[in-house]
Length: 464
Image 1 (cartoon, helix red, strand yellow):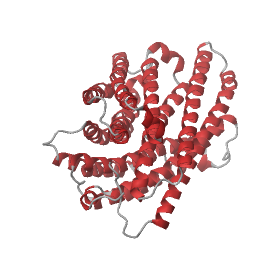
Image 2: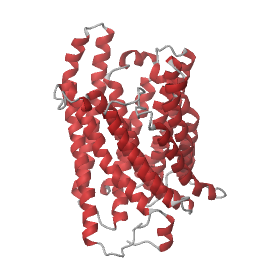
Image 3: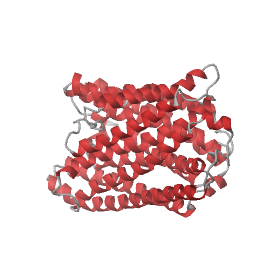
Image 4: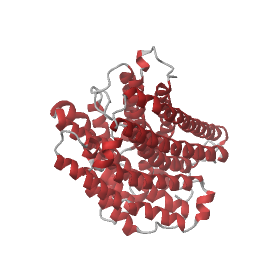
């Protein structure tokens, strides 16, 4: 399972391992925060008298941990692995990568502490305390420079589609972060700031998480299936559709608001348009897996990729429906939206990241995964939990929306929502237990590698 010296020098395996291992810790923290926050809805909140752990602050920690601690760290590590292999060039500086790793994660911890202390920024999904925003922006730019360098060096050769997606995401991400964390706070107040904030909320998913996640699947799936992706042409259609439509999606979060209606209509059209185009991505992935279903049955990693893709399809269909004015009049501000956001970030992109973690960690540690059984339980509990949560919260949203539309007293809608919130807590517990199993499995694999690996063991790539 060892790799050659040339491969070892090409990929910064230490950075890959560091980002992935800390991401496993952060997914536990993120899910714990979400589980804790959900307990307030069933009157079982454990920190009622503790200001630092008030539900609003815990909720902000939960969302920030999902986006910037768990998903970002996992994606950073995977990009450090993919880019050198796809370009045959090293990143600009491994030392710079380590500086970014340490400083970025210190900033994440500082974000948690300051939010709990009451210094969160009053912008949705941009709650990072304003004193930290400039430093995060600077180090994200440094990360981008480090990762774009090998692609720049390899620009004379044709790029595989994963490089297209990653390059676009690395260009978009600093712009999206600065737009969402600075412009609404300092430049554009009122509805203008809300329009920009809505762009940030959606573009964080659409221009950072989505392109990198898609690139990850287009790289890993052919490796696991031992055959090329079904259609490279379809993959490029999906890329250009994402690039063209997605930046215009934003105002569908603020339908029936003071934002000009032409902008709202544009958001609706773009939202429907992009979700028609991204079906090419779903078809491409499913067609590749369908070439040999036996591999999907045998491999938990492929199960994660396939289930994430089905969640992606459901999410896209749901989003194209829910952005219409008629549906928004019912589901706006309800638990429907909460279910949708969980299904996207956990059911789709977290599942794709889990596949990568189970693929890479044993190779990085030169040790087989500690327990295939724990890995399987992690998959099934996560799948069961997120599908129950999705169905439950969509149902709760419809009940809430129709009761509001019929002018029912608000307290009556709270009483009607209570059974759904108990189911939500149950599904969250399933997801939480699943992440505990993930942490145990990865920790025992790491411990096993420390106990048994020879001192001069090389990192492994095993056909990647």
